[in-house]
Length: 258
Image 1 (tube, helix red, strand yellow):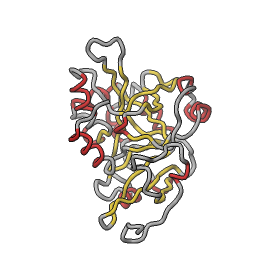
Image 2 (cartoon, rainbow, N blue to C red; image 1 turned 180 degrees about the horizontal axis):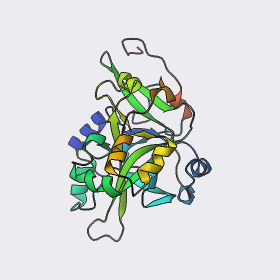
Image 3 (spheres, rainbow, N blue to C red; image 1 turned 90 degrees about the vertical axis):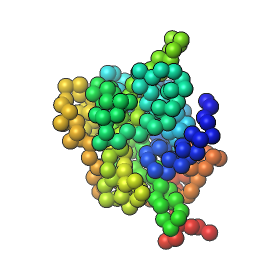
Image 4 (cartoon, rainbow, N blue to C red; image 1 turned 120 degrees about the vertical axis):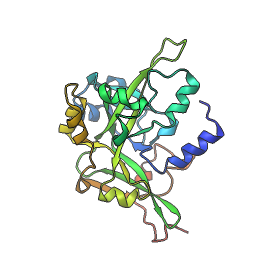
């Protein structure tokens, strides 16, 4: 897939500021048991320790219209009304994440928020702290549950002249909790994390806008674990199958190892 030089610069810069990198290194059985959903689509899925949004990977998702099964959707929402491929790439460069506060306002998000909500399945996610001019990578996961769900929205777009429809999604972000404020200390945002009860509500077609809005709050920081890791996951040669990417690594106060 071709990206213009300007777009590449935007993506490489923005990857440090929002929820653009996640971990889903698990297996079909674990996902089926955790979400009580058919995971047959995962038989040939390539489970990795990290996926980057700007690579537009396929990610396991449970959607509002088919909560009984896991689907694979591409990261970077393309609205159904998108004109052509060029328009699609321009839009999706800004839809890897969707701010909770503007879901009802943005044309790309308004309709999916109303009727096309989804759960994005992850083990954990990565964020970068700004410290003394350096970017320090952190890994964040749940203390008790090896798999969790992020709140998302999705849409389906059929490119002109094609018989194949693309299902794409965006991860919703909310204001950071105290832990994430220290880590994501520039934008102070975090992905929308759910407990099991909230997952059911998010997918419920009958729930009101007011109840959905009450779900979009920072997750309890006492239920999360977070530690600094080696500055490898953002590099072009990072190995997505290397478990040691998640190993703790300490940084001095100035943020520089050397």
